[in-house]
Length: 205
Image 1 (cartoon, helix red, strand yellow):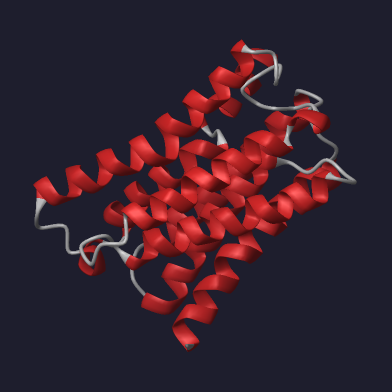
Image 2 (cartoon, one colour):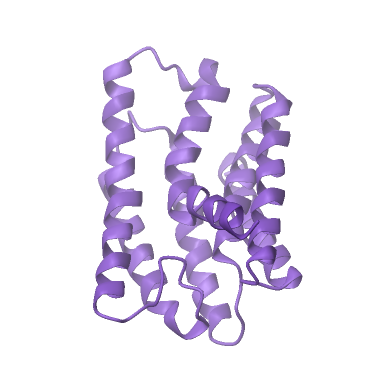
């Protein structure tokens, strides 16, 4: 079970969530995504991977190389703030570089929510450890919930699958003794609430 839990933690790493969110958007909401330009999709997809996955992971591996953090999961509370700060900075740069009318507003909102969640996680981390994995997948579930609610598009089965993945990930983190149940629940609530709240604010304003 430990190997399976570690595999789930890698596959559903928080840094994977923006790219996964992009894929969910184009796959589950084709009528509003209007993906009739495959070349444009590939450009956005490659930029997303580079800016929100490759660059943050590179910074994590550099910090591991110089002994600043002990693993890519950044499980030690005292090691977390620098990776969070650097990743938030990279995501802010990604927001600027993806500020293009051809990039879906959903993706920009999703990144804004991720930055907000990371800043709050840094503040919480001063006193208490919260699950970064659950913040990530909670954000994905919150963003997809907002899309389903406001667009009345897509198949709700896929939304249920997203929540199912969150349950599997939370269980995996518990089995690895990486977090307590409260840290997992609070992480999910933070990510979910941030993304859903931003979407509601954007629609109403």
